[in-house]
Amino acid sequence: MPSLITSVLGGLQSSSAAHNAANTLAGAYNTAGQTVTGAANTQDPLITNEAATAGTGVTNAAATAGTGVVGAAGTGAQNVVGAAGAGAQNVLNSAGSTIAGLNPYASAGSTAAGQLSAATGPGGSLNTPFSASMMESQDPGYEFQLQQGQQAMQRAQAAGGTAQSGGASKALEQYTQQTANTDYQSAFNNYQTQNNNIFNRLSSVAGMGQQATEFGGQLGTQAAGTAGALNTQGATTAAGLNTGAAQYQGTTNTNAAQYAGTAGIQAQDLSSSNALSAANYLGNTQIGAGKAIANGDLGSASAWNGMLNGIGQAGNDLIGAGVASSGGYGSFLSNLF
Image (cartoon, rainbow, N blue to C red; front, side, top):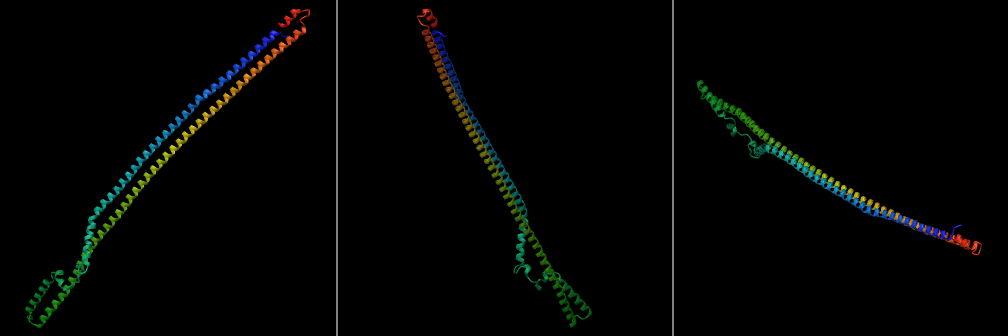
């Protein structure tokens, strides 16, 4: 059976060992919790900073790209508008040169039209009826022909001895009238032919001028329409380029902002998760440390309880053996040790 001294020593050793083991385990728990918490505190700022840096980099890159696209679109739009304007001006210049070449014909036509209008108007040369007074101008040989014919008849009558007769006078009068009728008709025909020729020539020149004027007007209208279409198309294309660039810039900036925001949120989520996990781990280690200390206290109490039981058993054994027995003090000391 255990002795009193061994029970006391064993209880003290067991109690001390329980406390030491509990303290060691609690210290290990606390050290682990602090290590995890320190690591989380160290890494969380790094995570958020890296996310912020990445977001800023993406945002700046998007802004740079958007600005570049807008600048390129603006330059392209200016080039398109300039090219359209140059093309439109070339069309107008070409049409202007052609119209300038038609001006002499248009001018001649205008002059001819004015002359034709004056000649066919009241009192105009082409609106004056033919008269006998015009015969000489229209048939310059009439007087000479009449004179030569009359002289020939008179010579013939003189040679025949009938120059002074009434028949000779009548024959000369008939010849004169017939010649006048014949030459009048010839002069009238000449007058008509001349007027028709003048009218036709003036009409032809006036018509040529009218055609030149109409063609020039049509050419000018077409050139203006083509130039306007070129300028409109250039402006529309330029507007499309600028609009597309602005949309690209807006989309790029929006996507970059979303990326930066998402990165920041994810970093905060990760940081919060790390902090929460570290806190949970720290709490668990503190609970474990508390349990270890409690178990150490329980072990110490159990050791003390065992020691007390040993002391009590030794006392009982000492009393049971009796001091006055034949063993005397020797028996007492053997129970004590």
